[in-house]
Amino acid sequence: MNGGEDTGSIEAGGAGDEVRWLTPKERRAWLSIVATHMQLMPALEADLQREGPVSFFEYQVLAMLSENNGPLPMSELAARTNASLSRLSHVARKLETRGWIRRRPSTEDARVTMAEMTERGMDELVRIAPHHVASVRACLLDVLDDEDLEDIGRIGAKILSHLDPGHWIFRDPVLVGEGLTPS
Image (tube, rainbow, N blue to C red; front, side, top):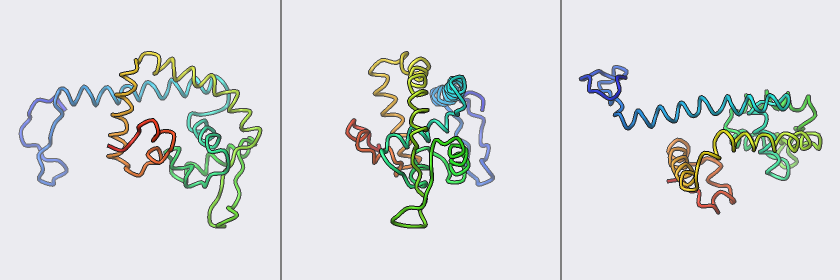
């Protein structure tokens, strides 16, 4: 709370545990992550909005469907977009209305809903993707060197494996082939 200074034995949540305030090094790391996220995501969102009627989350849905080369169960698509099924279902309805995706029951299990990209959705993604990639490069990647990219990949995987050891990226053959593993 106060930049890492010891404030005594303040209890956390009444559980009898003393608060472990952030050290200056921890505070710097924490605030850097938060500030980066809070600046990066709105910048990427604004760039996508300038290109057309698509949010960052809608773009992620389209991108994940395009990378799969076929229908995906909604539950897997939710995992790949880091969303709840409820949020994904709401956005899927919007994307269906635009004609960009379609949903249908699985032919193997009627309890499972499959989502797939339409040709119109692929056309929209192909139109927007070059602009989005340029935005990602301009906002993030172009200021980093190869060592920075390795560090971010390693640190991101370490944090993610702590939060969600079963996250789908640890099962993705391309990412695993690039050395992404839970730490």
